[in-house]
Image 1: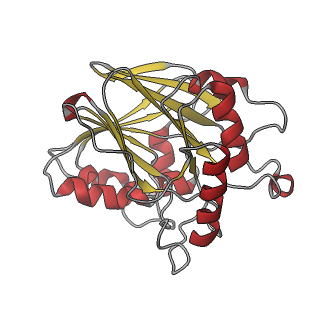
Image 2: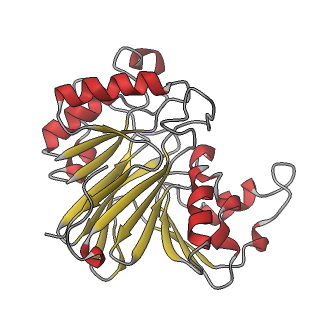
Length: 286
């Protein structure tokens, strides 16, 4: 965990991981320290709440939010593969008439909408309860990849296209002079850093990056749409990122294996972290 903020919390950028796995949830004795839920990141920009991806980790975040009463939030989706959206029907605030949820997506081709995707997921025989059971003030907002979004005063969210089957979007949050990037799911080309990713993350305080594989494993998974922890470090070095965070762990990657990866990554690039459920990052305003 980064040190607690020493300044006004309303002027800090804070992040908490609720889900760190990719592809499928993987609970069990070998993943208990890191966590087995799929992608979900809570980001607080002062009092504003942004959420990135709606994997199974979204349920735990929803329970925490319900304890505090009605919620207002912006949910940014990288893409609509099931491991990144399957938490939506289990997200408590979305059933609360006093809550407001805006869902942002920019990966779909023209003529498709995220609302239609969610409706398809919540339809027999896949799911028994339709989207009409959601009671929150819910809206779906589409944007073009590369767009800049201002979800609240003082907050800017930059976007970029990622290399992933069916499309995906990476995000950069800028607030109070700080920046945090969420870059998953994306596949790199060995020896050629992705210029769109480099531009998005350049000079960022924190980069959370798809590190599903190792470089040794990568050749067996070309075309699957994911990257490696070693590429995470290369991108961070090339773009001048302050802190890299290894994310979207393979469901078969054990706690012990991730401990070893973190130790080696931190040796090569001090300060590098492996994302774990409950990990909190705090960036004071500049």
